[in-house]
Image (cartoon, rainbow, N blue to C red):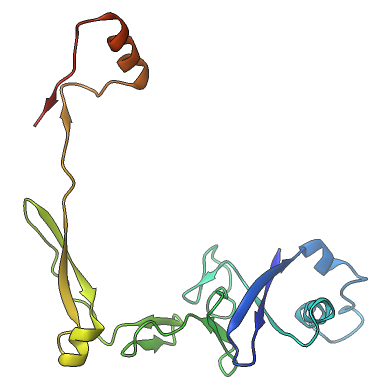
Length: 184
């Protein structure tokens, strides 16, 4: 399937539809062999017949961060996302700017923080720690956009041997005085 993004008057993606590739290759659908127009041109004309007064651009679901996921040639920076932007000047799709301070990396067509996160990886017995971007901190002090956050480590349950399967639990409940203990 080939995918086409419908754009509004500000080049914001409204929806993404797919067209059957067999239909694209059909000589009756695409007369590009007889003309100098691209298959995309005819697909857009087809979509405009279905949805009059609309604007469409082809997009590739295999393209992300200006790389083709299957090793092919990337197409238009990223797969179009509803609410995303089509940049006509650069002929690429990218997402809306997530924070005012973020900058667009024109190598990947992805938004990035103004500077890299610290590389420290911290943890203790109870928590994992990680760096998270804080626009609020960045606005107070341009050198302190990254703040450290934590999440509690999940409890570790240890079993004597392997934990019982559902079938083993049913058998134990039905026929025996044996029991399993959780070791803490």
